[in-house]
Length: 284
Image (cartoon, rainbow, N blue to C red):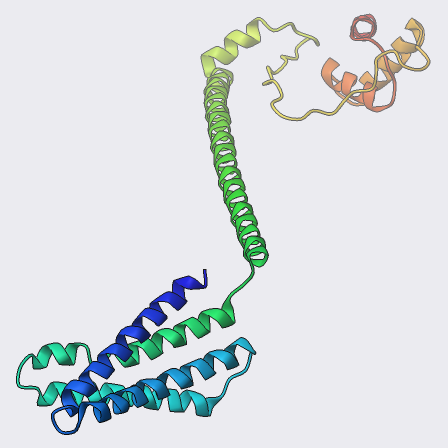
């Protein structure tokens, strides 16, 4: 892994040093003896390489020197300036020489990148642990997303089912209420009609002489529970006749059977409907 950043920096450094040395010898060799130009080129490259080696030594020790770094960048700028000056004064291929003038600075930048990589490099064990943690987090996030989607789909299904069931119940209730309302209206019309009322009255058994009972509508709604018939002490026929006669004649004119039965049960007495009617017939 270290070679991925070190090898490009080494290759760029070698190319830059060779190019700088060649340019210095070719450019200054026309104005001075070539050995002197060679020494100048080697001096630039040597200073550049020396500062680089010292920087690498400090980096290996976990240290850093701003002065050494500044000197190294100075040699790199000097080499770049020499290449640019040679390109500007060359008679031919000016563009080509300018195109390679950035190589010294590029080599320094690659060494900077390599140094940053070294300071942030981790061991394989640490990388494996980090990868495991990241994978675990991704797994938990995927499971949470799947759970949320499933719960959302389940809730949507439940709401749909509840809504449909409620709509069916509402439709049934509305239809039932409509039918009951129609039936009740028909019954009320039959009760309040003049001809129908006379017909119903004619077939209704008379309970009291000269008293025509009124045909009542059935009760629609909650009713009060009656006490159990024949509960407690059962009245004898004589006692029952006496109670019925007393209640019947408590008002003038005498009460009808319906009113008497109501008062009889309200007073706390109990008797079956058959015995109560029989007592009424006996006393009436």
